[in-house]
Image (cartoon, rainbow, N blue to C red):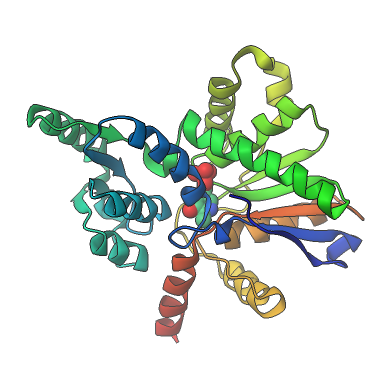
Length: 309
Ligand SMILES: *Cc1c(COP(=O)(O)O)cnc(C)c1O
């Protein structure tokens, strides 16, 4: 399913042209990269004889919202393990509940064991659970963004342009790995720049590299993969952490372009992209921002922002 790709600013900073790929408009449950990934996970689930799904994520998780909706429409029970350290009320969480997901809130150190126990309990009860890693991490999630990369190439042809730099929010690194694999498989020359929303170097970058290797196998060598992986960690104070500058970026993007961003993912990435363009003195190029979604978080932000006043 193709999402729109359009020019939103023909005279952006340093005379660059800013394009945006609206994966936030991916047509299922408020869209986003988790909706794009979920299509492929549920193709697997529909092929098998699974009768429930186990996954994990925080109360603000876009992934958990989408997975719970996909389960709900199929009548599959969805089990979500959620860390209590990130369990503040959100619209995503309200929707998980609406979709009938069973949410177990445990301390972050216990998430791993609780998942293992949930899966073994279900199996012992004769159930057939399908497990999806947090954020849809893994080769299936990577594949979704290899496909997205191919879409971007088609859209470049239609638009008659070439994106020299592609920016987006990098979390579990799956979106990042998919776009890198897409580029390597196509043999294109351009930079794929992930703006970290939480992890720091070197770990964050290593996770992306491992995901690329896991997907691409021996079709690219170590050096080529290292060169292709640009993981920028300068613009994150940590997952869900606030940065006043991000609020300004979000308000500006809505006023100027009519595009909602959020504080956890896309607002940070948009700010990081702008700073990177200035720092690296990138001039007069076509730049693509992949909007990875998170629309419900935009509304969480409005409420919280309003309450502070
Ligand atoms: C999960 C998420 C990301 C990060 O995607 P990864 O594939 O986990 O790196 C970015 N933006 C939004 C809105 C997300 O929900």
